[in-house]
Image (cartoon, rainbow, N blue to C red; front, side):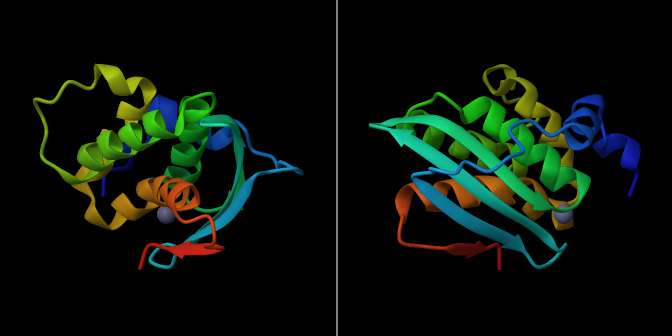
Length: 149
Ligand code: ZN
């Protein structure tokens, strides 16, 4: 695997200085995500204000891809509605799993930095762990853990 293809500037930056890397003491929902293939672990904290995700943060440890992806996700999703977050989940799912070389990456902004992961199937779960955790937190509030397997 050529790390240069994966570890672009955005990913390096977000892994070194993860955004929203903290606990939310009065979170509406807290969910743990685990990717056993790589050993990535994260705890996602989500605060809802009506239909809006007013705050979103995470803690955990994992590979550079998983940390950068969670950092980018929290930065992007914070302040969005639940509906907008679901749309972003679908867009990221497409980005990471489909051959969409001609797709318009513009709406994804910095999240498009993770498009290189698609070439390495074993790393796709590293990038998608935080997104699956977010989706589960929103759709199945009774869940306390989520695993990519
Ligand atoms: Zn990983």
